[in-house]
Length: 210
Length: 352
Image (cartoon, rainbow over all chains, first blue to last red):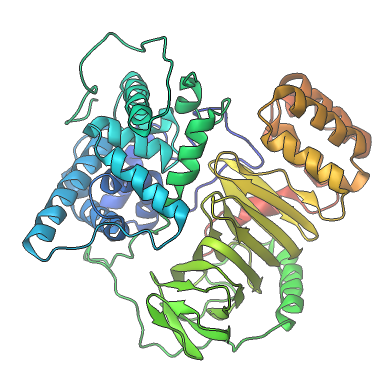
């Protein structure tokens, strides 16, 4: 079954766009995938591929990202029956993606020295890879949320819903990550309001909340 | 420069120029890969390359006629429930035939010499002196213009998908709606039985122009249904723009583009007034699409302007339209005389 978006409807800001919203619907989708339902798997892919892509793009060469996105979802398909709490799916798949990226980088080091991301001579693409490298140098939580926002086009609400992070954490990570990115890019910032009590570093690096 | 956190959180709020530029730049790195085909044992399913290829040879301009015929078929087909098997249910194929029209197109890093095949996952690239054409399985043809990069994402019975990263393609599809899909960085075009052209700029923005049939243009919940003789712009930030007929005056098009994309509210408001004043009866299609794209008093003004061109059906209430009630919007659409909205709902249902 395809995703059904309401005809002609422009969703309000931050309103998730897929039918797998809500723990109950996600749980049903996960049970269907565990039973081998390929349509449910395609739905899960549509909902979470951007999250996985962003996590991988922040860690491994772009040329390998699409392949690894598929590998992550193959792992999900094989192991989804191990997942007991559907609400933990976002954090679970994010962990699989991070682990797969780590394995991939280890294999790369053990094999041959590979060239870095190549932009192919397109000036805009070259610029994009330069900025990507800067984002890759940011703390993990800032990096992931910024890539979900700036590369994948996800809203803050979508990032929170898919990743399992609280909306407040996502907001802080986006704000501080963008502030850091602006500084590294030499863009002037005038930020007068802190979004959360001052803390050092990103909120909630590592195991996801919820 | 003050950082706009609202826009960072919600891409539909007032854009922050720096963030918009970063989005346009980094959005080029977005994935267009599809879900991996999986066998029952949980392994990646390998393409069935050994099957005999049954596709038609390149049909040329005759496909435009065929697409129109299929559109008629679609009009009949819309009244029946989707069957387990449908037209185009030929054996699954993991690659398409490709032929050089001129120059030296490439598939991956290999130069295409005359004819060849493009497999799922491979990219066809043309330079400034190259063009190529691809057979879309056995349902149609895609012509790829110069300076284009397009990837075959998926091809199987009833489902064929390309990712157009940049450049221009022309598609002529003779198949039931929903079988041929083209992803772009800023919107996804779903063929509803038609002939159309799709262009993507380097910044991911694009233009869809439909010659026959209908195309659904969608991104993140914003949809445009573009009929023959109409076009729709798209960009990474807002997704598909409001469709308009190609025979509208340039000033009307410019104003509509402002309504879709202008950041300055004064300019946007003035442009909306221009559109509402200068819309012809035929532009009711455009006005209908504008209803959910504006809010507050602007939405009321659009509803009034549409009612001036196509009276609101007695069965629906104005307040239902203003709160974007789907049934009310659909009924009003049906009154436009273009086609029934109910048909469009069906193309999103599974065909097989």
